[in-house]
Length: 116
Image (cartoon, rainbow, N blue to C red; front, side, top):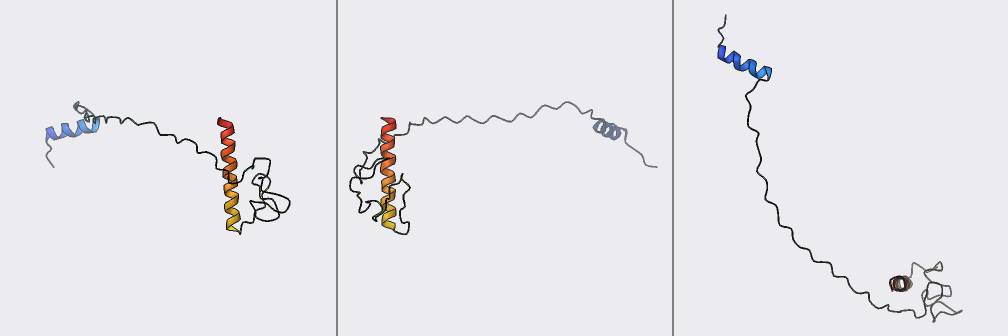
């Protein structure tokens, strides 16, 4: 038979039973707090003056240059007003550019009315 060491048996049984000697808890050192950077307030750009590419253009009315013969925005005989169901020819890049400028003019004029 094999001889067993009584000290080794005690160690093994204490590990199995969970009777371990109390160990000191491991404390991780705290990280240094970073200094907070003071953020400056964002600079708010002043609203640019409304550039009227199409004088007289409002949400409900066409531009002054529009008449029965044609529309300034579409460049054709039909209306290209952005808020009146614009039938702008999307294959014509110049007409699309005029439509976008008219939309921007209306948006800026609406914003001026709301915030003034």
